[in-house]
Amino acid sequence: MVPNALEVNNISKKYNGKCVINALSFNLQKGHIGCLLGESGCGKTTILRCIAGFEPIQSGSIFIDGSPVANSSNCVPPENRRLGMVFQDYALFPHLTVRKNIIFGLTNLQKPKQNRRLKEMLDLVGLTNDAEKYPHELSGGQQQRVALARALAPNPDLLLMDEPFSNLDVALRERLSIDVRKILKELGISALLVTHNQHEAFAMADTIGVMKDGYLEQWDTAYNLYHRPKSQFVADFVGEGVLVHGKVTSQDEVQTHLGTLKGRFSYPCRNGCPANVLIRPEDIIHDDSSPFKAEILRKNFRGANILYTLQLQNAEKILALVSSHHNHSIGQEIGIRPQVDEIVLFEA
Image 1: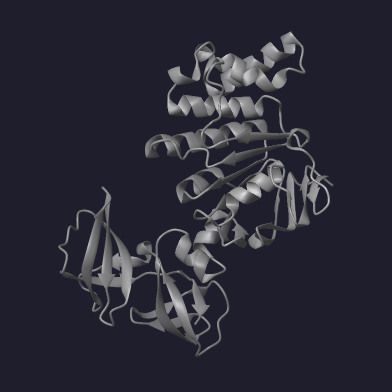
Image 2: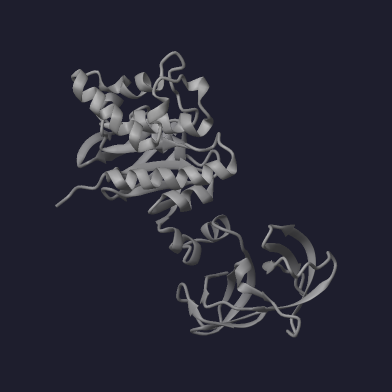
């Protein structure tokens, strides 16, 4: 049986008596890319530091490629964990060229093998013509590629990435996250990144863990996090949307101030129970002939679409993503109708 690239079993971590990671567990399969997603202070970087060996854990255990590296009484040093690390600020050596930065961790190899590995890494990240440049002569995206090549050069069992694209502009960040995923998949490298950026998480990861206050709320695919969130926090945190009040009237119907919504329930809910129903912007269709009207409170122009914040007659607010050809004014009432196939709801 092939061991997982990473196993985190029920780990806890405290600082000055305060618990910042609480009985947290997840597994990462070999060749997969995982992501810990959450706001600042939720504990995601602390988990990465515990996996890397920079921090001890108070309880639980961590395995990398089937080998134990941490428990409450033992902590294998970082240099013995066969890890690669890409930092937020790249952490390149400013006095070394791209070539020397990349081969820094290959001193155990003979010169011919070093040069062969160097060429492979330069080709991989598209920097063959920049080998003799210094970090300050490179763009932010190129520096991040050097940092990635340096981390991958020793062929680690697991690559850790700490907010790897946060210093880049939005367009470059999205492009590089797709490029890095492609590189890791070509090499079959297992990786775990932490980020607060959902677009990065969705672009990069096979499995994503949403974190809150040291807890792992859900470890799942991007699709399931978006369409089948297991808690109201995940429903509210991932993507855009609002929770409106409703009442379950059958096994596939719930009554709301948007009318009766009929579809598959993400989770079973008792008939007659009050519920909070997740409504995404794409669930609301602009329809002037609809009897349901809503007042425009805010509008956010997004090029092809406008994101409208609407107020229903009972004062509940919803979001609607409408083609920007329909350019309505704040304060105007528009007709809307819901179109929800899979209904995400939580018993209130």
